[in-house]
Length: 206
Length: 223
Image (tube, rainbow over all chains, first blue to last red; front, side):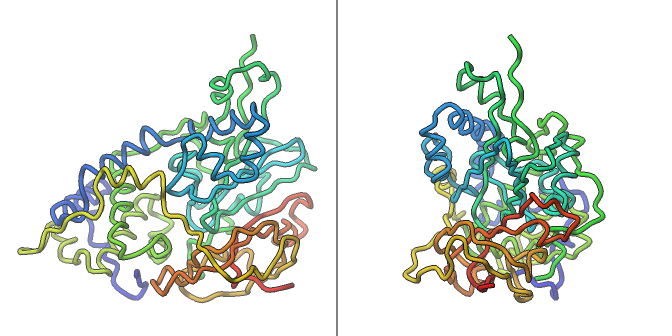
């Protein structure tokens, strides 16, 4: 275990982050502690395969299929798995739905927990001390910085991810999107709308 | 642990850093070394010398100036190096030299690409079977503990000593406070507890807003 009273070994590394990482990776590969091919596979998974496009498909399906929406709200882990998304940092999913009167927003004040299978790895602002500190205390001020102003009587529910439960916000379906295909609906579902710091995009007119 | 990581409600950090993300299209990684840290740290976890809770604690234990000054993946790397040294996977001499010590054994990595590809969609569920019934029910009013202890805990400072309402139960989950120090999983019932914003922040807060936190049974008592 790390111990605050011991010398911190990380202080021995070179100051430049790229050199720091290179030094550690080289050491670990030479010692046989990590498989370099597995490093590349892990990077490929989160750089190219697992990202907010997954969550957008979940939301689009929930918007267009009332039975699926019910399953998603009742057991999000199972419903999300139906679409092929599951696993690391999304083992226990809960979906929370925005309505005309309720707006949900997700944070992890203690670290940066985030639902990886549906959103990928988190953006910089989500991991920032500022967001983690402020959104539980001043959600309206934070949302205003993202360009969202809610009615004074809207109930804002902030979800602090302190355990292994991971939250996915189902944004409100935009008006004028009734006739759109699942793929087009998914294209309206922004990453931030599934965290609660954004709204779904408006469909293009015509 | 009343550490610098426990940030909920702390003031003075300024605006949210969203300048790179105006269109929600910030790149997933900002430098080539960032995903390498993400991957290396994740793969080193397969040695089972620590678990997710101990891994989080390694970051909480960084000196406060480093915690606030390092970027996210710099924290991941620093915590990893400290874990690897404290568990004996590498030595400080090897970290300084960037080379294995002469004559060091060459290990076989605990996970290869095929096993990783199988693992990612499964993950590591934290739910556990339990024969003990939950002490609380939905709708119960509870008060959180005022303080836990100086090790790893997931009861944030800003909700301590406050009254909230149980809105859902999740069965038993691995208890981070013991699991982090490899003292056993001690599964406990986990609940989602809702606090009104005014309970936490006083009359300055909106009377409509709430903050919801996932808490283990030993963090809460009947109110």
